[in-house]
Structure formats: C-alpha cells, structure tokens
Amino acid sequence: MAGDWHKGNAAADGAHHRGWIVGHFVGDGTDVRATKDVEIKWGIHPAGETRADWSTDEHRTTVVLLVRGRFYVNFRTESVLLDEEGDYVMWGAGSDHSWRAETDSVVITIRWPSAL
Image (cartoon, rainbow, N blue to C red; front, top):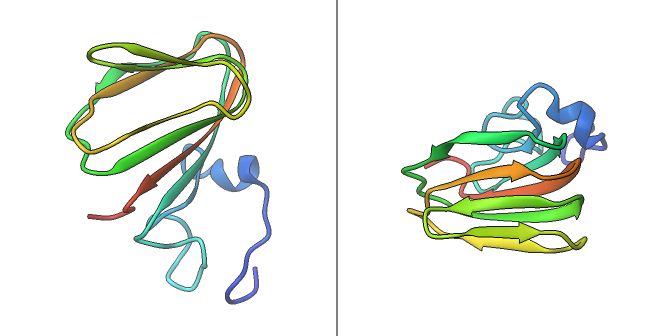
C-alpha cells in the first residue's frame, strides 16, 4: 500500500473481515480502502452454504454480482437465482434477505453507504 492506492488480493485481504475488502471497518484512517461511502465484499461460498437467518432492518442499497456458480438471494416474497456469470440482483433499504449457494459460488457484494 502506498498512500492513495492499494494492490491486494480479495481473498487474502478479505480474510480478516468475512470477505469485505472496502468499508469503514477496513484498515485504518490512512488506508484508501477505509471509506464510509461504500462496502465491497469478495464472497467465496461452497455448495450448500446458506445464510439461514434473515438480514433485517437494512438501511442501505445492495447489489450482488455473480462471478461463477449458482447462487440464490431470497427475499420474503420470492427467491432470485443468479446462474449466469454477470447475473446480479439489487435491492434497497428495508428488503429483508438471506442467501444460499446451490453450487460452489463466487459473488461480489457492493453496498452503500458503509456507515450510517
């Protein structure tokens, strides 16, 4: 890392923050990855892994982008399957959700803002 830039590996850098590589909780005040504007996660999920509990009371906007695999994002009213590279789903504040990896999957999650 050098001042206003950082080169890294998403899997390695995210290991300390459950896959999150950008956000207010990453690094320290001098790290370009530490920001209150956005959070970015590199998610590696083995087949069958789920988020069994619903994520509720969310106040941010989120997008999940499929890199590879078959990945479901579940909302209270329906489930959305991401199964082609580049498929994504986006939702706003107040949308309860959970997820399930049907096959080994890699997803990128972006949400904003990072800190309310």
